[in-house]
Amino acid sequence: MRSCEIFIEGIGAARAVEKIVRGGVPVLAARVQKKGVTVRVDGKHREKVFAILRGSCYNGKNVRFAGLLRLMRLGMARIGLIAGALVFAGLVLFFQGRVLRIEVVGSGAYYEAEVLRTLAGEGTKLFSPPPADRARITAEILSLPRVSFCALSHEGGVLTVRVEVSDEALPLAGGCLYAPADGVIESLTVLAGTACAAVGDSVSQGDAIVRSVTLVGEEELPVTVIASVTVRYAVDAEYAGSEQQALAQAYLEHGAIEELHTQRTEVGWRVTGSALAYAALNLG
Amino acid sequence: MVMEFLREIGQVLGAGDALRIHYTVIDGRGAYFENVVRLLSFSETEIVLKGRRGSVRVAGEALSLGKYFAGDVVVRGTILSVSREGGDA
Image (tube, rainbow over all chains, first blue to last red; front, side, top):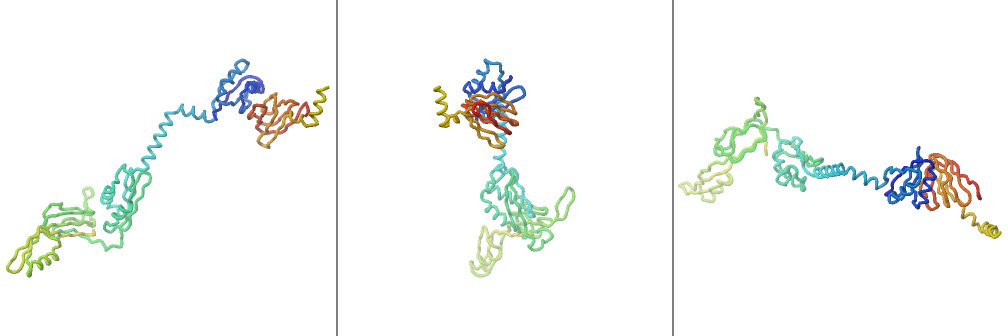
């Protein structure tokens, strides 16, 4: 398919074609034009055709190459454009398979921070490949409070995480979140509301930890608090009976006690240490 | 006289047919010619091919040549008529 077309000017299309054929060059096609004839021959015979025509009254002009050879020459003339197009196509294909943006949508979109943390734990972040183990990520997100549906999809470089929360849960409680005991805040999770304290702060039982308002510009708007707090408090209690009975009773009342210390008293046993008190509002 | 004798034998044996231009016309596509010695005329409406015995005139529209070499010619286009002239037409 490496042929070329030659336009031969002059009278006598039949004679021109006949000369070429008699010169031992197979003519692949011939077409009469206004002022001559266009002849197609194999590219390797091009020089021979011009040699045949040189000694006669015909003018031969190389019109163009045809077939694959023409495509190759066109390609070489625009090699920069073709190379740029290939690089562009390669980049598009490469980044199509990467995460260019993460979107958390649905009624549970307020869990965006938790979703991003879960994805990061699986190595999924901007410009990384999409998550391989989607089932594990979905299960982890479904374990969040009130989450009833979770789906991951990756299309066009955008990783979309749809999180839906169930409306069949108990009606949301209003009001603020208060400290459950006198002690130091160990952990604080606030999804909605305004925190009045921070981790490490000393609080008294009944203190407001999260208020049911949120600041929008300079205006405070009421919101439903979705938060939880854990406070570490000191345990100092006396129980009658044996030491084992005292420890069991202390565990029932306070849960796991750290820095546990027992001391015999006249009444029975004194148990000291520190324990955690947990309070949550519309969370868990 | 010898030539006359040989020609008569050739005719009896059908050797004369072997030297004529043979052609096959495919309606709407073109035609294929064998035993062509020379291209006498070539235009969009008429192509004349010379064989060893006589010639063939092809009339039509938008005529062009396909492959032409070693006595074989392909004519493309709309062929309206093919007629033999001269020789043993």
